[in-house]
Image (tube, rainbow, N blue to C red; front, side, top):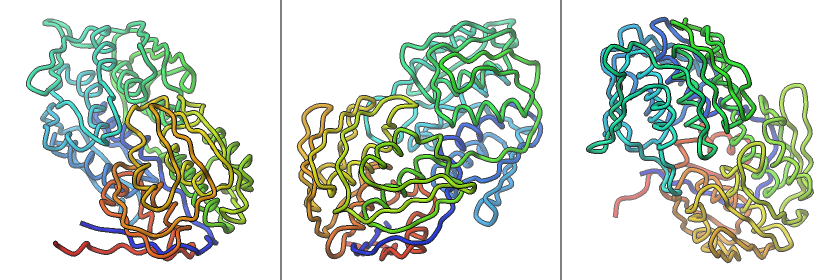
Length: 429
């Protein structure tokens, strides 16, 4: 099992390329199931979750031409897909596996998908996916850990419907949008999620021949078509990777250019960074960030909420900034009930944080010292790396397989900016 060894105290300088978004890539891989023609994706990040999804769809009979390691591109051909089951062994590690449900049901009229797993950050039910598909005419039963979906006898396509979800759900919006693309008639999704990754998926589906309007708003209208074509599509830049490196430079200090980053996808975070004293400027090729380091910052209170508000996926990373920035701050987590697992590990580094329910109170300006810490989920991993960049001495971050699920060679990018960080294999006990 790999570890990261980090010696703090080095400013970050130079430039890096922001990878394609994990949360856009995964649904777009599933969108390839909607057509018998080849689909090419570019700017694909080299992530464990991407490899898991590719393994899952390949197990169904999808031909995968994978050039991600060399060119960040791949081609998928689902013309020979012969299985409509997503087995537990492949689904258990990644919640996004549920995204095969809508495409399989829409194109083949049936699907059997294991209930998904993923990071242990709280309850993320799939009931809204099921509710929406049932509104479109699907017959669904949950039994023995699987979602078993089919069309009524004599029916060959899902039927358009007006669906209002009980909560804003990103994967739910994506699943229903993909299913509706091949449904008979018009589907309207109200209370839809508005994240840039959903807009990117919609733009890919439109290239495939789908008729979609309103993506990026809370109401999406989809007019179903009889079939979809193949396409070539470049995955949008990862706004969470962008935000993570913005926070890393803010804390460690330095001068870094983030190629491919998009400021408009991260307004809430960038506003808070500027209020904290960080210089973040848009350029023709990305974002330029400058910081004098932790002591020059000012702690910022914030509350996570659905896009375009402050993203829950940036809560832990910005908390690392608040830990070392002078001043007190309050963080309120409204999306997931168990997303403060990084707090205990940050306390091992010297952070002063008190948690009560959904609220964390941070007494900033802490002087951190290196220690052994353990990653508990994807974004918690990133927050510990950020904190270690400014800690005195060496920090060992264990269980970095969490980090690999969502960051494309993070330690390599940090090394190129001057950080003292290396990946090593843990010694057996």
